[in-house]
Length: 322
Image (cartoon, rainbow, N blue to C red; front, side, top):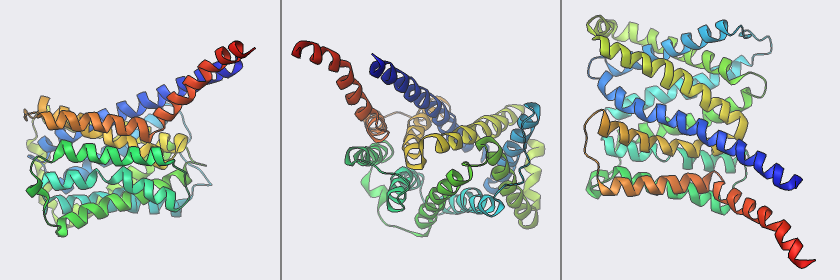
């Protein structure tokens, strides 16, 4: 009986994790569609820096309202700056530069490698251990993304500088996740996220002010609906989304969290159809199904279900044998 109760508690925890990560990926996926609207009115680098800065300041305000501690004497500043350099400045700068020199299809496909690359780094550095079945889930997830975003194989031929920059952006971000996990052993994820976003975006804004100061004038002509989209992207998608994601890195691990990012592709497709009016194809639906299967396998959900079934049948088997 105690074994069954323990299994039920574990199942509830797993469902909670799935719920939090699904909501986070919903925010990130919809955000991709909204960003396509924002870059029509605001230069990408300026928009990214300002958006992330608003997110960081919002988190500090939330922490102050909640009367949470925000200054830690034991703050590992070297690791914080390293995570900022990799996960905020490096990732967003390389991604912005790469997107200007490659196609949307190729960039989406390369970004889909992020969970797989994170898993490989995690196993190589012995940060986590993955069974063959769970690693296979990461592979299925990438195949699902490939099916969902690629309609014409000729559209992904060749590998240029832009592709290399996008690939570099996800590699530096993957390494930042491992640094973040190390920091969250002593610093709350919400506090860490506030520092990462604020410091990283402040440096990006300084760069923009020096290189393209005239670009900030775009905010003076922004329509009210675009301001609403900007604030949704800043506060919910970035501030709340990254806080939830970083908290899950601490709770379940780097590779285990990364596999969920495949779900953002599904919500991005939904956002593209609903918000941008783009068509939805049968191959995309099939790709989304593969992504879901990959997430269930990669997170250990299938293994957990098999284990729960065995525990459920165990008392009955013992009774029949007596």
